[in-house]
Image (cartoon, rainbow, N blue to C red; front, side, top):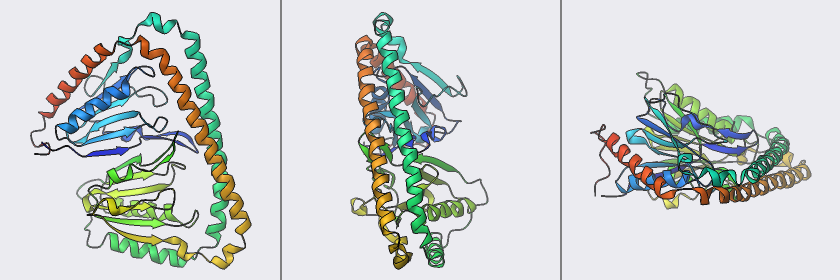
Length: 380
């Protein structure tokens, strides 16, 4: 039996608006089963979910890993789309509680497997470290808000120098090419799913998950352009037109400003459009079946006019990057402090009991899979 396909996304992000959550889009509310995994740091939530994901991949099921933007090695959720089952970390900052208890959702509380006496022995330390983590994230988000103001200044210089007519023409040509021959679907409502493909993490901006999302895409429209040249607006227009035609879309938002869009995938057309302006660089050669059409909106900038703002743009570029680096530094400190918090929990855990619980949940998931006779894992 062949391995299933693995996709990696981020359901939440550290943004200029603070922690921004798309947790409502991890899986549909009418899922077969949603396991909400609760417990403190270091109790094994991520490992619990990951090992179930690995087992389902080995059995040929496609799986989604929803990665944690604040800890590069952790997962916030695991989804098996074909059988509509998810395991979701339900602890702060992404508080998740059952919406349809019993019928769809249930809580797995890994706190049932810790030694309370050992936990209480570290009560003061846990409270102190928790407060420190909160402070570090507040500083990081403050730096990102400052970066947003600077970036808006940067964008204003570029947008003032754009040839709007040429941008509109380029966008019209792109849309005509992308949706050529696509008949509208009026027999159903269009569905949209919102997530992040990239994230600001303790290791900086992570963009390496994008290739996993493009595995089934045949045509990529790679859109670049300096800040303010209109890339988010072009991607937003693609989303609007896809919605008008009744097509289902996956919309992946900017990890810095979640109001902007960085990647749109239309699975039914096997088409995607992506912001490839650094740091969102992507080399499509890793997927030989993928062809890329490049559109550079910077070609429509009046460079003579923009030259008048060379000093200002140089200043904003430096100040923006400095704020971004400061934010990443504090997110990294928060992660290291969180690791210290885990040291209080790990010795108090009964991991043998947790492993037994994981095997029980895996068997239940495999039983749910029998309810989908038309879903056949990838055959060997």
